[in-house]
Length: 419
Ligand code: GLV
Ligand code: MN
Ligand code: MN
Image (tube, rainbow, N blue to C red):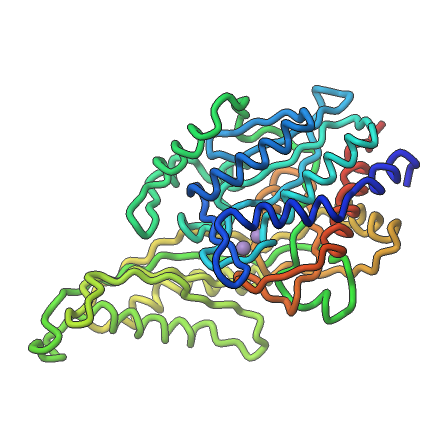
């Protein structure tokens, strides 16, 4: 590693990085050390404000695009060159932890600040992005900001998505954009030279293997659906079972059928129904309408394709009394990361004498969409017991800082390549 790059890496501050995590964790804090910071909520707006403040303190350029992705840029010597990008997300699951997403944003800011403090110039700009609505917990589907940024999906496709209270994304987005006026408006689809995302692993492999750095090789494929079951509401005490069109009963039939469809002795298929809206949702009324989510994942393209295609026929065949509508909301094939970026991450870990291993990601990330438009990769750090999407999610300050150092070194290498 060049001496100037070493100086920048040495300026990554474990203490500052941890302090910023704890400050962000106060925004949307919930009992049990968790965080509830739904996309485009008051808490998300507050977190954006804090990030913008830290970026402005360093005089970095701050911008925003039409879907609210937030950009923090340190210019390079060649102002026309496409940026090397890093980032992750600030929204959380409803009962999320203090590290999922926000780590990649704060590690990126730490890298920018360390490089800036060291006075290292880069040929390419380095740009941090905080993607809008990575989680999809409030407004499904997930990874929405990067899907729109990369042109994989259109913003208009998402504006009418509503949360559980009926609030439309278009209104929540407008409020979020209005809360941070005066930011430079960034175009969607701006070219990127490369993208590296830092994240907690969200699984147990690194911890079990005693490694500090995960060199991520790719992300498994996934399919999301909304399934709507429509029947008729009736009196729970008087209506004979044979005369009912009970939407909740058919929803259960469908979910059981999908469990059968996705049964896998190798335990590689992931199948989850995590969201259900029941109407009228009253103990003594038969449900007239149920909407539930389906999330299916697998690393093999042929398998996820087969399973994805089988969901609708299996759901329709399983319903006995009601009508069923199946709407696909997410269709992501497995992605392999760019060998050059994977090697750069591994080289950075080796250069810092950190024990690393290559591993695939079971969770989805915005890096998946960035991999469609530029060379991309990811850095994982361990999280305690592999627990994530849970208030108990935890990671050590030392591991978080180690990941930020690897990120800094890898960003510098990529931003000064081709000189
Ligand atoms: C992202 O949180 C995912 O669902 O994998
Ligand atoms: Mn995440
Ligand atoms: Mn998550």
